Length: 103
Image 1 (tube, rainbow, N blue to C red):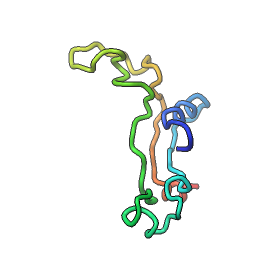
Image 2: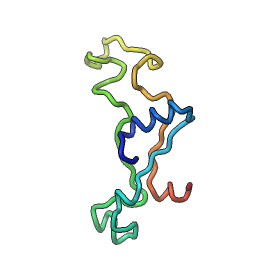
Image 3: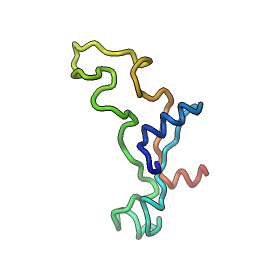
């Protein structure tokens, strides 16, 4: 995840032609005392190797398909292809344990 918002990472990946994005936490930031079972959750409050962040890659407020208006059943919606700042590539969060295997 690094120092910028996850949605910006996905948008940067999209801008530079990536087909998708895999997001994972750096254990140096989320398990600063090590990744052994005695140093992460459920013994401490630091993220375990299988932990992932949750949240959106959308950088705005509310529903991106009904900007400025409430997202109700009768509200007209934008088409996904014209919604601003909505990522067009898939992004998958994974735990740093899985990232270590891949890397």
